[in-house]
Image 1 (cartoon, helix red, strand yellow):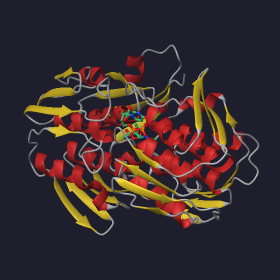
Image 2 (tube, rainbow, N blue to C red):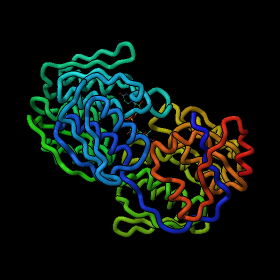
Image 3 (cartoon, helix red, strand yellow):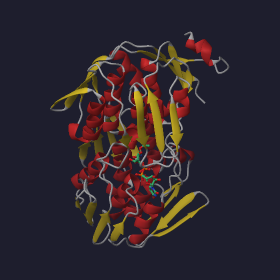
Length: 432
Ligand code: EPZ
């Protein structure tokens, strides 16, 4: 396990401007879907994060050629796939590896993929993915930690998702693009990265309608062609910097955003007292003298995003009074609260509800990133805590945030990554 840590010294308010990278969850859906396309595609604005590197490694292990054309631009050549079996270790280090099932099934009529991994947010079943594949006529079997799917001929069908699922929506879109006839996905996820995937596949000749609504219609096509496609900006990275600016009483211009993707985040921050100015593809978030308590419920898009929940809870610890946050998507997404308590947070958790008693000061300490967004929340907390905060297990954070310490340093934060010998206790690093 890496002994690299992030060390943050209590920072002044963040000031300056920061550019948002391409969307992680778009890249993790689009890259494996190139396997379905079967032709060379050039994907631009790909974020430089470890999950993308891992996805590229997974694709190359089944024979996909990956060429880094320039920073953020990847050429993906899926013409010589060597295997429909992906049973290597890397598969279980991320959730999005399961998109390979839809892509291989859609192109070759079969796939054998290890069960995925990903952030520990409670139960993360795949029953809706399987429901979709079976509706298309595939035989599915999960045994020995592998998902095996096979079909002589995928035929379009109607699929009603029992709950809104980004992954199942994406996987069923991918698997149905070349099926015979029309597939209708009802109760579909509407996240921006679902729309981005549909736009990418349509630019390759697919016929997908209604992405971004809860009914997506896929008219099967027989042939797809290569394309060049630019990934949308990452609305969760943008939202994370919005909260970092506001929580440190700063004033930051966030560039390269699609503001309508951030409407629910902006609305909540303004309710808490932030000043937000929009201008084309930028938005400025500044502190306006107040932190009002507030209640938040995370929901599928366009509701307040679950991937912003830890960052929002951290912000609400600054707001005097009692705030409540309800997690409406995941079974268990408050595990990180124990780490916030080590900094001084007064939060009680009961199942899907966190009750935050805000307004008391945070004091720096040694904490652990338990997952990607929880790690980002700890960085925000370290920025406004007094003293020094050290964050371990930073590999979680590097999965989804491109150059986060450099970007925050450019905004005036005193933050850096330090290597420490394995046996050195955290407090040594604290003194660093
Ligand atoms: C995607 O995960 C994102 N990951 C997650 O972001 C995000 O939290 C989530 O969507 C919700 O927006 C990627 O895109 C790689 P779901 P996914 O299927 O697709 C249940 C991050 O921080 N469910 O929408 O796995 C599931 O248990 C990550 O970037 C089933 O019950 O999420 C959950 O309660 C963390 N059966 C709910 O649906 C299924 O077959 C939503 O899950 C599928 C899902």
